[in-house]
Amino acid sequence: MSHGAMIAGLLSAFMAFGTPSLAQERTQLLAGIVSFRDPALARSLENRLVSLVERKNAAGLRALGDEIRRKDGAVLDAIEALTTKHRATGTVADVELARVALSMGPCHQANLLIRKIVLAIAAGEAKHSHRSGAVRLDDSQADSLYAELILRCERLARLPAGTPKLGVPCALSAGACDEGED
Image (cartoon, rainbow, N blue to C red):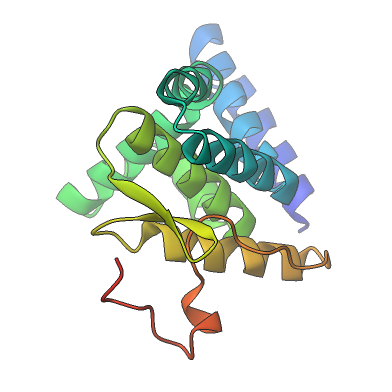
């Protein structure tokens, strides 16, 4: 079954069960998750984030964080809830959404991670700097993980690999992240 067919089947199943508002919520969540397959979305956010960090534009960072919360907050919250529930109990409340979450590849993961990074920086929860030609997070490997995920995503999408502006992919540094700089 293709990825699109699986999503269409899940959307149909969600529409058939539950209250209309719950079905609508699930449809919106799944549509958001599906949109996270697009590598251009992640790169666009990466470029916007890096530009704002380079210009030290705190107001712009907060506005970008607000935009992400407004557009993607429900998707991020749903994924977080699934993850939290699974970690705590080993089970999930919504099996169908869990199946979708498990089917997410590197493009989905890069899109989720870049949003979490932007939100953390916008809220002042993630210290960052601009060095070695890229924005780097201090005391975190999330930036390097993002760089690796977006490069994998682009490779799988058969796109030319871009140059990371956020983090340094560990694969490009002889397989080991530079622990001393992060």
